[in-house]
Image 1: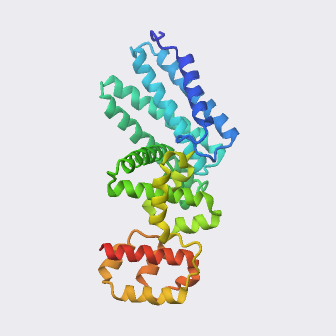
Image 2: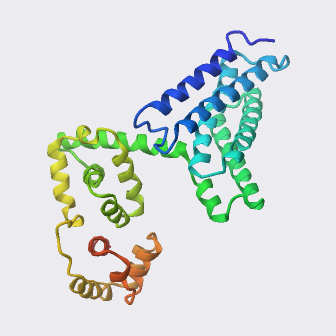
Length: 332
């Protein structure tokens, strides 16, 4: 029996149209730049097809007694998660021939999970979390199956399972909001330490966008892991320069000059000598605390005084690392 007010054909078409608009929007937070036109076309059609099938199944279930709002919610869950997991499969470099089967299994689990939760009158906030947990569980299980079949290596699995377009979208949106707030606070001269850091990272992103890719990557590699993704998000932000007051940009750039010695000639021997003095004068407990969250090469640089840093890092990165480590030691 049709559900009063629920036109599943039109709704599926509308959700697919929304997906297309997001994919075609320049600088969209919900769609990475790596997607080819063929990928976008396939994502839109998959969203339409799965939403159509879900809506049709709900409408034809004579025993279900869902209203239009409930049927729309289940269908929308499938549309949104199909969109995001389609992108995750592409970014995670899952072979094309395996993608649709995984998406079908995810959609079927969303359908059953959401339907049963609504029948049990679960609150919507809890329902949203339940569906998200189910998607993560099924996605992980399906990737593990590909590892067992030899389709994915363990390393490829780790990359794919930790890929989340939804999380990336949320992070980008939060970064934009933080940047807007920080800019307003700066104009009103009430900036907090966190606001100042946001502006520094945004100003750094403006500089890195103008540098050769190799130089930009060298500087990114010298930053804390927690800051790198924020800087990358700002670099991808359209019209970033127009989102910050130019006086604020200039002030922030002045504050980060010490980690951007592009014009400096780095005296590696002298820098190494001074760095070793600093390390010897610092307690092992503090060094271990600083090193624990760093990538292996930087961790070895901090903990092993014999580490051949001059052979591993470029002079620019070497100097930036020493400056950063010195600041962290002073903070402790």
